[in-house]
Amino acid sequence: MSDTLLMVADSERDANMLYGTGFFAGDPFIYLNFGRRPHIVLNNLEIDRARRQVPHCRVVSLSACQQKLRRDGVKFPGFAHVIKELLRERKIRRATVPDDFPLGLARELKKLEIKLKPSANFFPEREFKSADEVRKISAALMMAEVGMAEGMQALRLSKIGRKRQLVYRGLPLTSERLRAVIDCAILQASGLAANTIVAGGKQGCDPHERGFGPLRAREPIILDIFPRSQKTGYFGDITRTVVRGQASEAVKKLYDTVFHGQKIGLQKVRAGTSTAEIHECILQFFTQRGYHTGKRNGRMEGFFHGTGHGLGLDIHEAPRIGATSRGKLIIGQVVTVEPGLYYPEIGGVRLEDVALVTTNGAKNLTRFEKVLEI
Image (tube, rainbow, N blue to C red; front, side, top):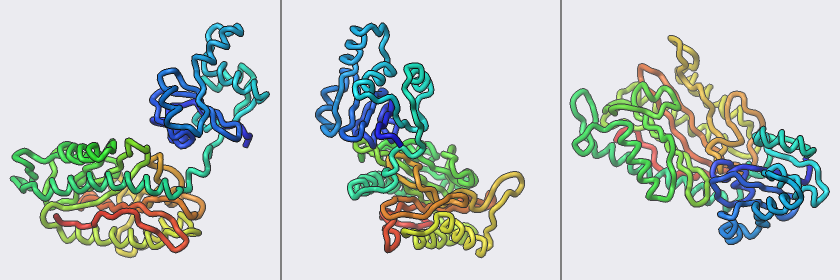
């Protein structure tokens, strides 16, 4: 990899840009690191705020660069011309970029004879969380737990109406209403929730179904909550499965199996353990309990998704823990452990905690209780 790193993106949505700068901006800007102090090129709207908030970066005015280029004869100087000028000043003609670097801008830079080398692992250190990052993830996780607590309370206070339909404060309790309760609580805790999952009954058998329509008693409801901290950009992630009222014996057995499967996964989370091995151990346990995975009647059932994923400035980042994942866990990684079982005739059950990888095992960062019947 060359010594010069280049990014052009907004840091609201691009985790690498936020990691490299620690600065939130909704519009794309330029990041250049020549091996020492990073340079960021911003429009005048952001200049003063950036100088206050990110003193570790050299803040460069985009308009000042463009004015200079116009004086030098460039009629319409855009990002490509500004990047070339900054590189030219240091006699540099190549840079390493993330593999999602804008294609149009890459073509412009090629025309200006700037060579780019894409990297799939632009900031490899992102995979290993510092103590400060672990605190930020834990804070975001607390926001998720606040939302979970509010959602559970709404379910507890709901009454069971006709055809087992739940009624909350005089109106039917739907996935949409319960999601609003959860998301509002997270917003009040300074988090941002998006695509919170509240999926009851058969809907829970599609792991990424957000859920819709009335919720009912005596069937499993999956609550999967993954907010982002407004202050830091780090994510939390938690999943619980509950039944309002009494669960059937089939649901109780399914829940108990997932509960113990997750325990197996958490016990396996330690530095040096193969990520694929963790998944395989849980899958074998489920099979031994009589819960097979495969396609039946045209749809998948059983445990057909990965065991977990890294968590940080992206909701899904390295490492992955699944059947086809590679590599071993390393000290400092933060991962989810979220096995699940899904059968349309019973419903879905998934449990998810967040753990820090240490030499002695997993440090579970999640504090929220696990209970099936409420």
